[in-house]
Amino acid sequence: MVSITGLFRTFFSLLAVSGGPSFTSATIDDTVIREAVILINHQTIVFLENGRESNLALVSTGRAGYDTPTGTFEVLYRRRAPVSSSYGVRMPYWLCIHPSGQIGLHQTFQSGTNTLGTKRSHGCVRMGQITASWTYYWLKVGSIVRIQAESPRRVSP
Image (cartoon, rainbow, N blue to C red; front, side, top):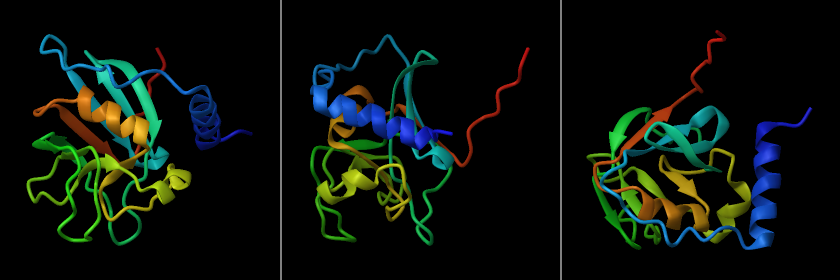
C-alpha cells in the first residue's frame, strides 16, 4: 500500500524535475477568499480559494516538545527574509500567524527540504522554496490559517 506521504514525495520530485509551474506570478486579489489549512497528521498544507482546493504541499510542523499550535489564526504580517531572534537563522517568506511573533509559515532550510512531511520544526510551519514563495505572494495579511491536528472526517451521503 502506498502512503499519502509517498505519493506527495513522488509528485513533488516530478514537479521539481520538470521545473514546476510558475508560482511567482501569483497575485493578491481582493475579490476572492484565500486561506490555508495545515493538517498536522498528514504534514500537509492545503490552500483554499473561495472554499475550493487551489494547491497543496508537504510541510514540516513542530517536533516533540515544540508542537505547532492548533486553531484558527490569521496572517498578521509578512516579511521577505527576517532573522529569527530566538534561533539566529534567516526565515525566507515569513508569514507571522501568532500574536507572540514566534509562530509562522516560512521556507525550510536547504537541509530541511528532504525532511518535508515529517515533524522537524520548533513550532513553525516549514515549506519548500517554491511553496513558500508562492504562499508569501498568494496569502495576504488577514488571510485565515487553520491548523488542525487531524483531517476532518468526510461523511458519505
